[in-house]
Length: 132
Image 1 (cartoon, rainbow, N blue to C red):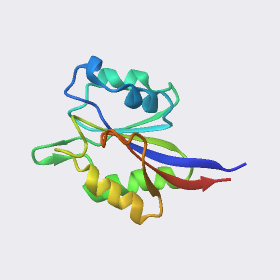
Image 2: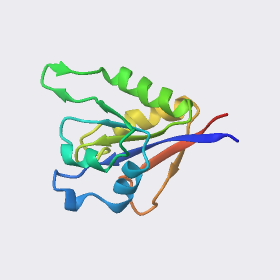
Image 3: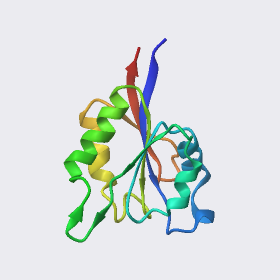
């Protein structure tokens, strides 16, 4: 049986856990990989399963853990091998984050775009890569 990999680009909100959407919380609770930014409230990571791979990809002025290209490669590679990936960004990933660039990288890699919630662009789900 093939397992579908996907990547959910989710906003972590302004830092108050009570303002994170239920859809983002659900995605984190089912994640096998969480790639998160500097501005995310670290408490949100407690929602991830204990065996989830947690990757810090934060950027501060002049100090980047990964380049944007490396982040793009990371989320694409994990989705390609069938992992359930959450790319968690502080605030809204499509306003101040680079969610658009990450969505383009996932689409270019053959991971098809689909909005998980048509009323909100906050959670863009990209999927269709399978593992055996």
